Length: 92
Image 1 (cartoon, rainbow, N blue to C red):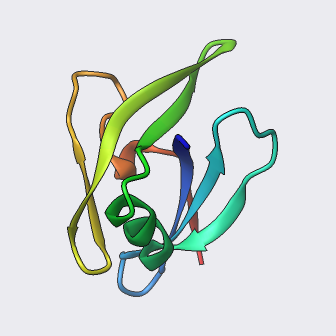
Image 2: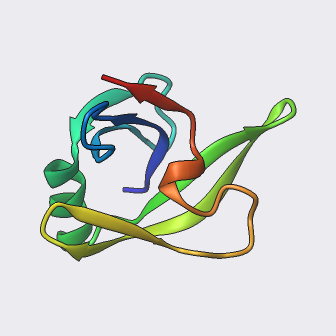
């Protein structure tokens, strides 16, 4: 199943991403999940991409990969939102 990340939560003090808003292809609701959950999805073979709104349309962005434990990065693909930090951000 394909998964999409469209928003991130960042720890105010450290600046690190702590949670990601993710949902499955065809789903209308998302869930906030810790980074470890997404790394486990990727290791299990599930494709994960950024997803963002351009005007009225939602667009698939960069592929998200597991760089190391609890650290994600994207494979830049030239889209305007080709990294996690360019997605809408909440500070907690």
